[in-house]
Length: 461
Ligand SMILES: Nc1ncnc2c1ncn2[C@@H]1O[C@H](COP(=O)(O)OP(=O)(O)O)[C@@H](O)[C@H]1O
Ligand SMILES: O=P(O)(O)O[C@H]1O[C@H](CO)[C@@H](O[C@H]2O[C@H](CO)[C@@H](O)[C@H](O)[C@H]2O)[C@H](O)[C@H]1O
Image (cartoon, rainbow, N blue to C red; front, side):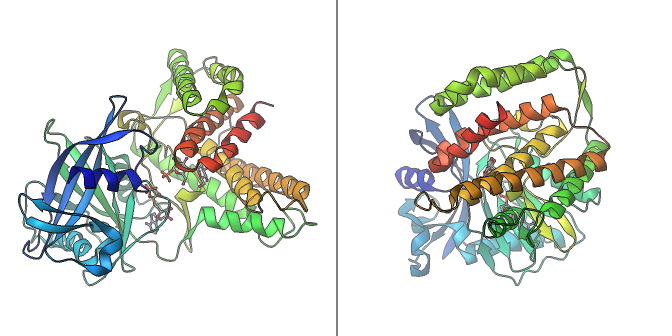
């Protein structure tokens, strides 16, 4: 079983430890979902991954233990083994299995109706205010995700968290607070699933159920379309083409400012002293030092980047509050009712304790600025190295697109929040994000490392 789980986890898109030498050092069953066990049992396994450097991480792996082989799930087969509770079973990745996913939904509905079979190990919570549709079928989202999301018809979306840590999950916590506060900029929270950590008795939050924004368009896709549109009109400027995105960028800036205002009203706001800011500069420096180990191409910039971070230590009294923490265009959805922000988990590679801490709003603004840069760069490179015709024009126009949209976004944010961006802080957060992205790309999309590396170079000139 361990070998099968090791092979399965190592190749999964959501696995954050790609490229590291690993072993499965433990498997604990968080619980079995309510439902008959005879032909199929659905168990939530917590798989401990130990790395060669001594670090370890815990991943959630829900498995459907089926008595009979299921040919339509061949692509999701994890293995065939004898389980101490269920006997010999064909074991499938449960998120692909509609019958298995129906058990989650049924358990949420039972909780909402007050008819739940309260098994101690798995604790379902619901918020009320929405009648879940139990007749729907599940569809697994494809795409580059750190977790697994499953839609139930048009009604709701369940996110199964993959890397789990004992303690509060920031995504559930922030959605809970913003939903109760009536925010217009998030999908409403419907419920969540908890279990208790064996060793510490602390909660482990396993899944989140929320409103499915069925008609929404992904901000990243919309931005790519806009750049593509511009690049196909070689003679026109960004403000002259039909697909101009600046109005949307401005509306995104306003949506972020309004979300920050609600977060500031609902969570504590603190001020960072000079000593704290020295700590922040040191943290950014240490992230840089670690990143240089993974991406040697950062080394020539390390000294000057360090200078950008040190400038933060010279600032006075910076307000900090709860923020998104990993904001980019892929975390924004355009609906008929305006922009929504998703995924308040923070950067997946950061320790949980750090992701729960208050931070400057400029971290989120910087994340979006990086993303406008990415959209321009990704579209430009999609023409391929062989296509040299118009290469200079495309480079010029895509920069123009990035600058126009970055400008529109920041201006609208500043106006809606009544603040003036601090260039020292904004540059440092942008550089810190680009450094993080270098590591993220090296581990997940090595062909893209040059995108944040180029941005680092540009930030320093
Ligand atoms: N409530 C929702 N309704 C519709 N689509 C959503 C919703 N929340 C997220 N998504 C889509 O699912 C994708 C992944 O969600 P996200 O929360 O970013 O997951 P992950 O933590 O795995 O990165 C997003 O890019 C977005 O397009
Ligand atoms: O959405 P996640 O929480 O999984 O965020 C991680 O993956 C993102 C990629 O999907 C990554 O974002 C980087 O690539 C985006 C384009 O794909 C780009 O728009 C972002 O600006 C860039 O940072 C994110 O950093 C990572 O944490």
